[in-house]
Image (cartoon, rainbow, N blue to C red; front, side, top):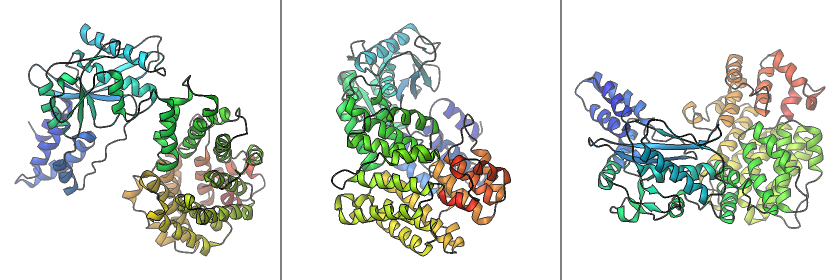
Length: 550
């Protein structure tokens, strides 16, 4: 059997770790053809490797050959569990749970009665523990089909819990235990074999088991489903804890995906108090704005418009709503909203948010000097109020953007360079995901400022093609459109437009920005679409480009 066929068999058997190890060993072959083929195959295998399979040795091997070990982001409703077959083979399956399309639970075919009973017990226990776990669920398993046994129960219950609360389970979590309908766990068999499988296939993972099965350093003892759910990193039963974590992800770490998932799990929770809805809706709309998700923007914007206007939480929600209306190029609604925003008595983060959202509106409205004034005020706040210093980099980047729009190009470049210095300055307390995402936006501002002062060649080479592939899709598109305009590459802009068609006929701000690039490259149809927008009636293409946000 050829190397390719042997690796394919390992992958089919649910053992990408064995495929990696065999391909890595083949790179030491005396045959150049075998070595070259093995390195090529390693790239394919790497894409199938779960995060927990990357032992230090495998990471070193991947680094030696320039292969990325970055796994796909974890999503809610997925938990892995080990299976040991009677013939000695072993592998990990992934239980996947999501809402079912029919009137009742949908369970996989081909499993024996004992296994199906364990799945039903697990779902019953989760429904009893998690109020958000309502409605029929669909349960499926990714991996080889030749298995059965009740030890899947804990993985099923945790996957259902994760799906209901929209909190992804840690990538290194695996589970093996039976769950009773009352939430208590029962031990299962073959634990020593499963630990051996864990050490070989997922050496960076841990195994959640019943206390009587916890006989190894890589096991975690859990007696009940509620105990096991804490391994998700958050107890979803505690509304207050989820609210706090949501706010922390939204404000401190700027992890909008996690903040959105927590907010999603809260918005329909019957225990959420009336005054707590505003911050939850604010996060949901802010996440939709960050992701340029037109459908979610419309849904959460409608919900926010029903809120009272008398507290800071609502004012924050209205800031995000104003950003949404600007994204939608809805000038009348944006103008009305801008008039409802009220600064708090003391300078806080809300002050920065209000003036930032207002500056976006004034840019769309063509009041550029007012936008410059608001952006400068925000930079000043981050200088005079130490607790706002973490916002300094962002406010400088925003100032650079509006200065470029009014033709103050040298000042725009200076502000962009200062913003990049600030984002990496530990004094400003910006770390983790917040720093990475902010720095990417700032580099876009810096590129545009360099091009504005005539340094297009420098701008084109500030971000490599390989690096750009790791950026969020919306931000990557903006950089690619700039490149197309600077190089006069209309075909490239057309290809980007074709790759990002409107969904359900709805054109978002990204589509308008793409039309702007196409129009400036001579596309008359794109120019006509822009000129037909009510916000841009009677404006020429240059003025439209100046007013379009982002």
